[in-house]
Amino acid sequence: MDDQTKYWFPAKRYGWGWGPPTCWEGWVVLVVYVASIALLFLCLPPARDVVAFALGFSVLTAIFGAVCWFKGEPPRWRWGGR
Image (tube, rainbow, N blue to C red; front, side):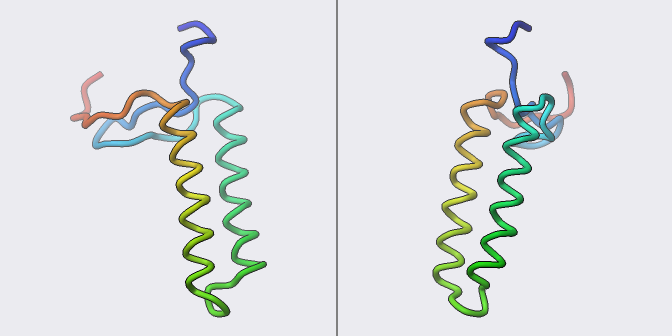
């Protein structure tokens, strides 16, 4: 596989979705996502404003999902075979 078709997030072996990253770019995206969620907890705790927290969490997760969709292996249901 050349650099143009290298996936940042491979498909899971079982089920639908993506597994852990396989390259540094994927790891950077994952670390930034987790750090963003942690920062959201610190700056806007759910106990203070649950609606704003849920909205922020949803936006961050949608962005992370979009990166996985565009830079990951095409998702489909998998039964374990390669």
